[in-house]
Amino acid sequence: MAYSLFDLRGKVAMVTGATGGLGQAICAALRAHGAKVLVSDHDANGCARLAQALAGDGGQAHALPADLADIAGLGDCAARALAWQGRVDILVCNAGVQGPAGPLAAVSDSDWQQVMDINLRSAVELTRHLLPAMAAGSGGGSVVLMASIAGLRGNKAIGLYGLSKAALAQLARNLAVEWGPQGIRVNAISPGLIRTPLAAQLLDNADFMPRRLALTPLRRVGEPDEIAGAVVLLASPAGAFITGHNLVIDGGTTISDGN
Image (cartoon, rainbow, N blue to C red; front, side, top):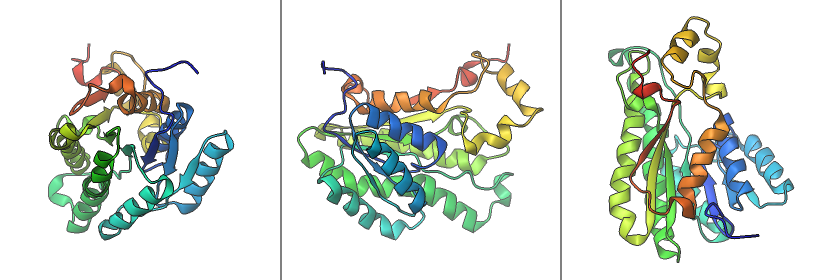
């Protein structure tokens, strides 16, 4: 095979939130470009099925079930990830929950804990445990944190989710500065409305969708593969000089004036 800027052969990638619509697309894209893939999610059966499907395509994949809300257990999760191939070169923190809809004043302490633990603290803990091993390797590494355009602007409905995603983008910048000298790149991706099960209620909302598409210059929603392709870019040699960046992939929603 000719050299490709997107070649991930020999790399080990760990993807959290792997069994959802976006996670599956990311795993498949990384596998298609040659990476060995650790499939991580709280759904153990879903992890096993996806790992089997990826391996059945001639690649290597391994199920790594984990509950990211169990912050104390993430050190063990990282150790199990490293034990599979002795390394993790690419970490994609894709797991997330929306949490309750409504004003921030109505959010309970338990909701704050759950959303911040799964969306933010799990990424902090996984990078804390995995980045030293990445730095000890010969080729550095790449981390991709899945943020959201909800973290770029105010939101009356999902403010807690937006706060957690804004913090993820800042985490990418901080870690990029801390770990760049060791050859590790850290970036965030902020998707707009993507056709996934998480967005199903919005996609089926006949009042919401015409207004949303009118605000989006491309006049459509995004597809999971369009986010997965950006993950491959950021993980591969093609993205070797990109770090600390928050890549917005929203069809232009956040730059439009609605006309």
